[in-house]
Length: 115
Image (spheres, rainbow, N blue to C red):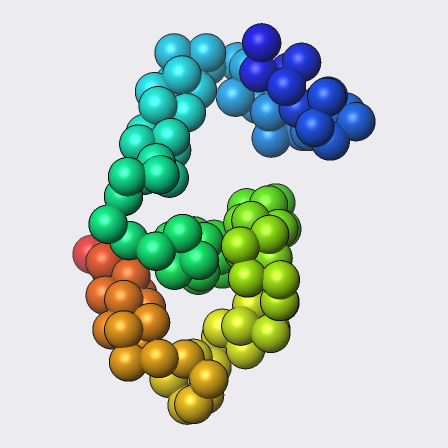
């Protein structure tokens, strides 16, 4: 079902999807979690959610995740300006106070120091 949806939407099954296919239970859990986070009744603005997802992908160096989440942000805002300036969000006046607070929180939570 997942592969068919990818082929319909994107024209092919993407490589990360094939990796998830090796762990279908984890894939299903991930998809439920993703849908929960990206639900329409979320109190977080959809554009801000997409911005957060792009930043987390950047912090985790996942090029595929950056691309797919940037596409979501583009759909929600009709602009990639913030994606292009996301690595320097602290010094960019385009980001609102709320966006800066959320991005700061995201960076703090995403940074894991291995000791």
